Image (cartoon, rainbow, N blue to C red; front, top):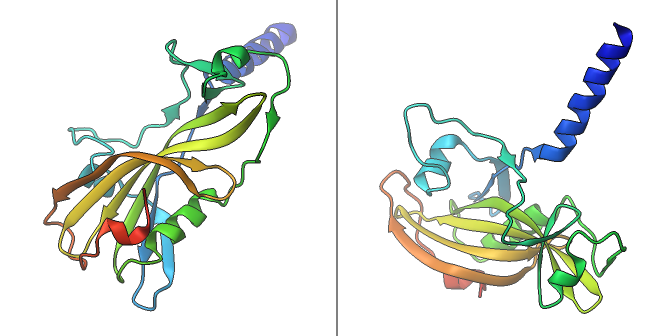
Length: 198
């Protein structure tokens, strides 16, 4: 009986590693009246308002799963991009990394995006994927994110970006800005161009 229990436990632990399910927090950053920046875990209502989540009868904040897409190349559960990505697909060789991952990248990004914005402006950063950009025989850790600004007049603007996972610097951006009018918020308008985002 002990052997069966131990075997069952080990089997279930290995299944968990294969699925690689993890919770990635979506964070809201808000510029306060004193110009300080506060942050908190984004509410479900805010996620619905900026179209990160779709509204339904049983809206739940579901864990994001790191499931492999067969259309991409991977190295140690990181999606690979770049001209030499195919050479490192599922490779057992050690890829030299040009940067390291920091737990502060999202805070640095949020602060940078709000630095030229008016008080009461919010920015929501939703982490979408872990990426390595391959450059010849080395790689750079990146995060793919969607960024959503909430302005004082109820307007929202959004774009997607690849962000350096060490310092929060935007390396590349696309899909934006997308303008939408929301009546739920009442903050002052200050253009996205002031955030110095490509």
